[in-house]
Image 1 (cartoon, rainbow, N blue to C red):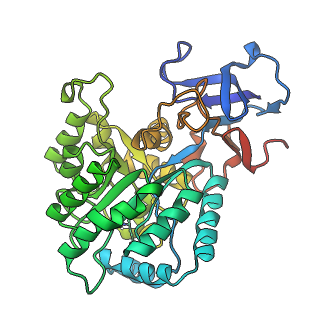
Image 2: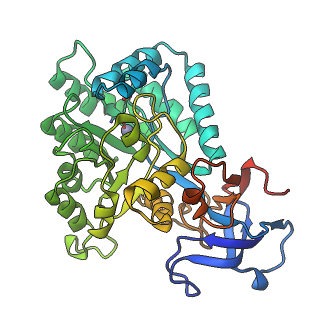
Length: 409
Ligand SMILES: N=CN[C@@H](CCC(=O)O)C(=O)O
Ligand SMILES: [Zn+2]
């Protein structure tokens, strides 16, 4: 049990003892991988092991719902050129594809595992990763296999870039057919980079249709480098998330908001399309920051993710994304923390779960959810933005196991 918690951010808005999901002077008990009790420290039951938080804050672990962790190589030179004024273009992906194809299985898995450990040390307890640096059948399958060993959920991104020397329509047919069938055992999601220089609206539609028919959940990279069809396609296909969302017009925001309106479905448990904002990527590519404030105000559910990849966002730091969302995107600390926990879980449809191993909800702290928690070296979540860049992650538990840091002094 962690007790004497100064601020416990549960993200559980069903609780009767708080309107905001935040508890003061609280305790949380977990047994095995499962949270079994949450409440006031004074009312806490007995526990075998006690950790005294000494007034520090406890949050759900970050749910990082957008990553590209399966890669080799480095794009420092491209980053330097960008910082000297050159624009970002999708074509840089090909450099990473060459390096990734040239790496051994063991090398690729070690690189990806190191990134996962780095993410955990900063409080991330649930990670999605995409394939997308293989871009032929054998290398996409290999990426999906490795991804399934290192991450919690895997997204097939064969539609990341059309490899040089291949006709775009032929490649789209390969992704929508044999490549999709070959990766199916290892992936839960499919994604398409619908953007100038990557896949057109029509090609994206073909990929999304095939992947939906194959039973995969859908996600879309959209509206990153300019206005485009990505957001509307994502809503049309009831994708769980559309990611980047830098260039949105009013009709894009209306479409996303409508996807969350109760009228948009006859089903009471209808879920819309989450807008996933990637602030580290926006800064590294010098794109306008995604309009997170406008999206929230319009009633759209948002997520924040790190988008760790070698081209546009070489960081696994969710604290950095939260800090940026507060300092530069107009979110309050609690809105940003919610987007990086509950929002990520919603984007991966893991915000609810069953009370059994492997099916537990993540991204919020409630009885029967997975015990994914982080103890901050700070009395409140506000310090994430108030003390930007400081190492405030003191200890991290994933499925009830301590995976980073040291909770005791
Ligand atoms: N936008 C598409 N894919 C990645 C970047 C990939 C790369 O440049 O290597 C992204 O999410 O930013
Ligand atoms: Zn991405």
